[in-house]
Amino acid sequence: MNINDMSAEAERYRAELMKLYGKRSEDIKPEETPEKEEKDDTAYSQYAHEENNDTPDDTKEYNNRYPEPDLSGLDTDTGTQEQEQYTEPQYVSEESMGSGTGYILVNVRAGEESSPIEGASVKVTAIVDGRRFILAEGLTNISGTTIKFAVPAPDAEHSQTPDGEYRPYSLYDISVSAAGFFNARSVDVPVFDGITSVQNFSMIPVPVMMNSGDETVTYYN
Image 1 (tube, one colour):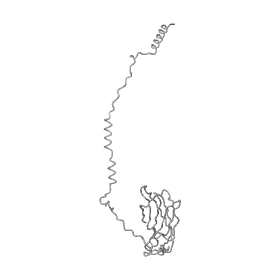
Image 2 (cartoon, helix red, strand yellow):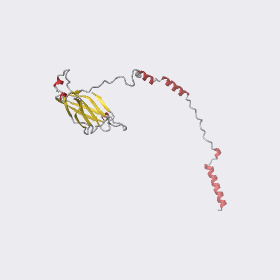
Image 3 (cartoon, one colour):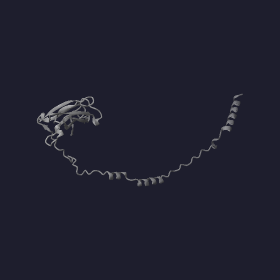
Image 4 (cartoon, one colour):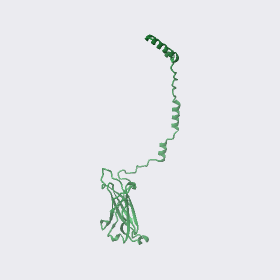
């Protein structure tokens, strides 16, 4: 079979395939795409508007229930209340603190008492004969607790039969310092004979730009 015969045979074969499977391109019609319906938002918008009109004004209701406080009488420079002049109790001698013995136990924790502070310095002081006198001092242990400090206190008979002329307890100051925290001081801590007075300190961390000795937080009992 020569080349011409082979070409003719191939052409006939292609024609037969076109009859079986082929379609003329002009006979193929594209699928009709339905026109996109435009969404009518008018009804929805109207409904939303009506719903908003029916919704109560929460802000107005809140303001009616919780009105802002009247601050017109507040002195923003000095405040409305003046702190009374504090006079620390004084003793003429150590013997005048009492013939009995009371105890002070101090717990030192980080802010909100989240964790104990080990190695905090604790001092128990009082004004004796016009000078500040250290009655006891020590460091906190791994639990943030000191030993029980023994300090003078009036005899227990004064608390059992109290009178207006003799105070049945002694008053002391407790100072606490720890690295990285503001100093703390609790004043007028009462101590009775034979009783342990437990004092809890929640130390406040010092910002990086400040020194721990710059401020002291004072608590009045």
